[in-house]
Length: 351
Image 1: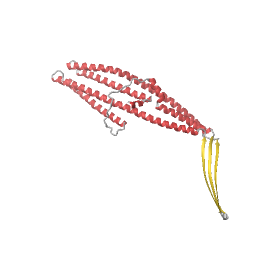
Image 2: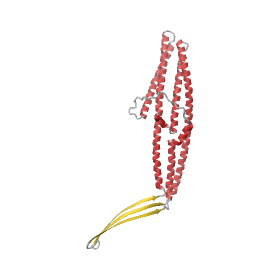
Image 3: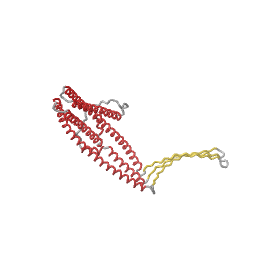
């Protein structure tokens, strides 16, 4: 109110600013988001591959423990048969009491070993149920495999080529390098000018009273383009230097990872080939050990061989079976690791 004149003004406006170009910052940010999305997928893949490797290793460990339990049961049956022969021969005066007592001691030792192996098998079953997220960790596990199936057809060159193209850790290192490069591009984008589109729409309403009621409203639209350039940015040079260093570090880490994978693959490959050779040798030894044990038992029954010598033949047989089992399991572990490094571990899901 001024000198009896009433004046009322209302302004309403809407302004929109749209960045058309900002030195490639928008496109670079979009690429970063896409790379981060892919990196999340790679992290998920790494976790899945680790789980498959752990599950496969424990699965074949469970088979190993079952086979070992079967071998110990066989050893116990051999000792029981020897005890029966020693007892019968002792009663007729053919064997001394010492032979009978030693046979009894060996039978009890094999029985104790069998009981301990049952505990190890139980522990492996619990571990396997836990890995499979079974609520009942004591649940009985029925498996289709009764032996450790070893694949002897892996080729080093194929494994290495697959590692270079599909290894998850290597792919993640590549993505880290790309992300570091995009960080540098984002900082460098501030060297370019920016272009913005500005639009606005406004409404002005006036109401005043000079001996009569009067009002007036105005509508207005405006548009414009803003072009700008950052003349001074005190942190830009330091940020570019840090981004360049980070990019070089990511490339170096990628090279070091490739070298480490090559070393791991070579070591595992050598262990894999050595275990295959050991497996072939031990299979030949097992045939000889079985023949020696059969001959020893025949001579023992006839009284031409002592109980100690029979026990040695039995021990040689069991040791040969144990070495075969260990060679099979160790070869399988090498196989699992080789397939994991080369990005082929998911083949176990197809079996």
